Length: 134
Image (cartoon, rainbow, N blue to C red; front, side):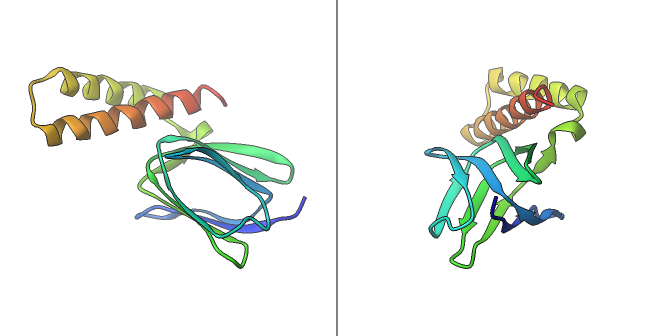
């Protein structure tokens, strides 16, 4: 299968940089699969499982919100606030984050605090789900 260049970046690090055969990520419109030769494209990403195919095998990661950009030169860039491989997720920590977020959602709080807790809950649930698919 033909390969293309992929970079997955967070504010702290380069998570992945190399050649891949396929990228699958969830946008605000649903899942998108990207192969070599994909048309130029930009979309917002939502917390979900992201799959990167290298040497015929997929590797899964839990991704937070972000953006994916496909350039004309077959370069794909994913910018995200957080991402981690499924086999590196600390499930106990994710469970604690889920519980904290659920408590915050039940508390009488401002709209800003509610929105933050809702995002934290979605991220925690996504991490738990992706970790279970190892």
